[in-house]
Image (tube, rainbow, N blue to C red; front, top):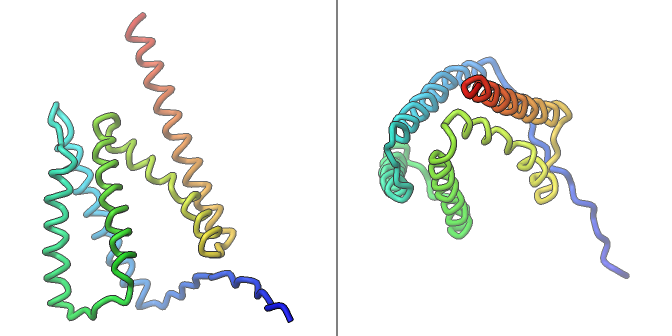
Length: 173
């Protein structure tokens, strides 16, 4: 007899929030938002006013800081070694470095807020790849949320572009 092919099961992510976990998450939210605001302000300052931020120097410094933080974190948190294969961690590290390089490089051509808005367009492709590659299932609410963020970003970018064209037209009349 021919071997039977089982249909792949769709992975679903269920998140159960208890009152304690909700309060923990809400306590971390201002810290995360604050760190992103600080990062954005420093990056905008570093790349404005004619200053050029060299991407490889930034990667070198941030990699050294990440390495020191990870080393100390593993010691103080007594973290057990990971079971993820080294080659997968290497691929993850390379994509992270590539992302840092290209996002900082793009600041030569666009301002930081535009870059952040462009990053918010990555949800639909990530969800699509999760579905196609990992057979991950999403709820309708998650698809709707991703599309609303994408549409809001598109409207914001298009509105901003139209406004700047109007300002240029007024300036040259």
